[in-house]
Image (cartoon, rainbow, N blue to C red):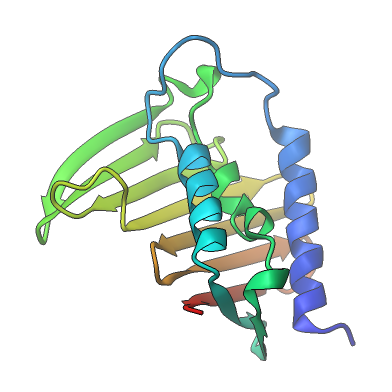
Length: 190
């Protein structure tokens, strides 16, 4: 029986293949970003995590079976670890008018929510929480979904700066029981 880690990697590869097949190749033109730039933010986080020499402790669960692992700083590929978050970026010319922006104050935080106006968009909403007078969010939550003839998938990613991230994916393949995959990853200081 494959380990949870092997299953996790396989699931990620399937997700990336689906995204590659469904993603627009439209590149950004001279228009400024309308939404918070997740790609830029997570590229910066990649550099920061490398610079700080963070290690990573992961707890993975697939349909109730658990596995844990700790990755040392020198073996972590942060670009790969954060790829799902980067892929959720909605700054594409074709999507400029596809999301409603809501700004509010919650418990002292400035919270920005981008909600998809169409149900067929993969990224359904992004929630960014900022501490007062900060330009970088301390928490990012992304909700994504995908429905096609073979399967449906619902995903929630949460990133907490200086703390870690979580990924919760439920996948339903036609004719099979749903799979639930959860990753809880905590950053470890050197």
